[in-house]
Image (cartoon, rainbow, N blue to C red; front, side, top):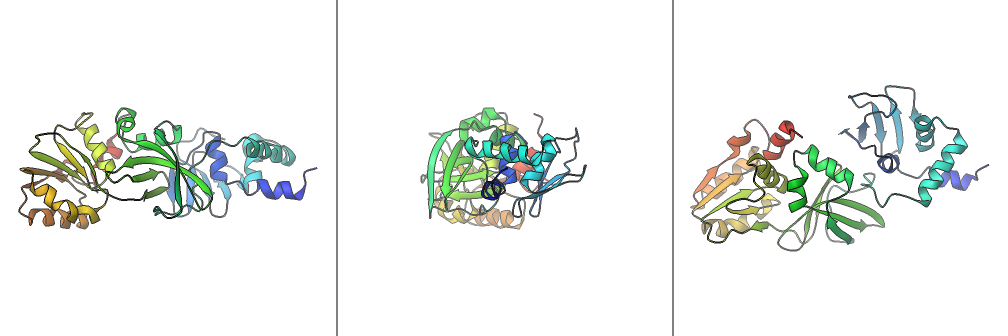
Length: 289
């Protein structure tokens, strides 16, 4: 018989972490709930719902519901004690790390954040994530890194896009943030008289995919945030032409107007992804791999 203390410990294991450890990743999110394709069926529409905050699940395609012990019993067809043993083994040999969606802030700065490892993009969950966003590994592996970090005693990892100041823009399926120092990212082509301007790095990567280029023939500036626009106006003025790939929303329109009013020869390329919020949304909807 397992002690109450052991049962209490295994009940604290995040369901999202356990599912990730057996290769099951969420398909989409609605509010606090993550939705997975149930491994009990061959469904294409996700029916397994997980609330990471409450750490409970419900399978709309079957009768499974409850805490993580109920989940292990449901997926493995095992007894309660066998489920406890499965989770004990998981605790003894956990996967290197998980996205740890539960409790992670949507904004991350350098306060209390320690980068523990930066390496080539190789975690399967991150590869699946960038590919779902329309970016092939051929492009992603060239520009992105796999960043592992700790904050408030918890471990996380994400796809990281380095900026010129030594910080990273971070993305994974549940998180959009950065590790300071924040800043722009530039790729300079010597003697280039034109520059391509992007708001976010996924838009930049989308352009590389769209034009089937591993690199751009002109210099590139990725703002990483529209708050950096004012800082780069003097740099943009030094180029004979600026090709702007900004968002099609109001903020993007205002940013384009600001550039144009600064005596800059700027061309709006957002018509390339007309009908979509940004270049990446267009590529995500039209990806072919």
